Image (cartoon, rainbow, N blue to C red):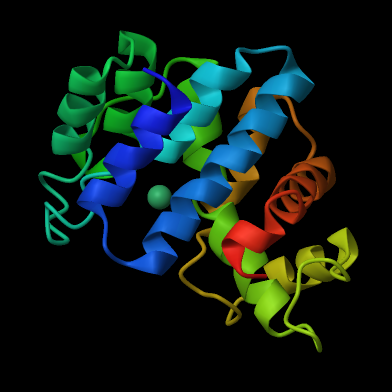
Length: 183
Ligand SMILES: [Fe+2]
């Protein structure tokens, strides 16, 4: 599977622009993390890009979300490591996170929303001027972007990354595709 094939499939299955941006942001962060950790950048990036591909097909049904996505990813040519990470990123299935890729996708997923929300309350609504410390400050405000699960983000410790560095890597990754994100 090429990156182009994966992205074409995302666009064929997802209409919501914000959902596509979420998957692009997840991809970007996963690539930066893989590089930082010496993991396979393409494998991690494509897993991030594809992880919510079934979001609209499953219509918010938590019991089928990520199961269908895992099947779609497999059909596209994703390996079983990638398929497993996509499958277990939805905790509703009760499938334990085993690999570094499983754990990375899980903690990255809610980080994109936190960073996006932090950018949108920034005076110029852009990522460029946003600093790591501002995002950390927002993380500590419970009511801010409440949908971004703080405990889940903090699980970056499971892949051996300090919290502050995780935020910095995530922010750097998203700044790298700011135009695609419209931020
Ligand atoms: Fe997601």
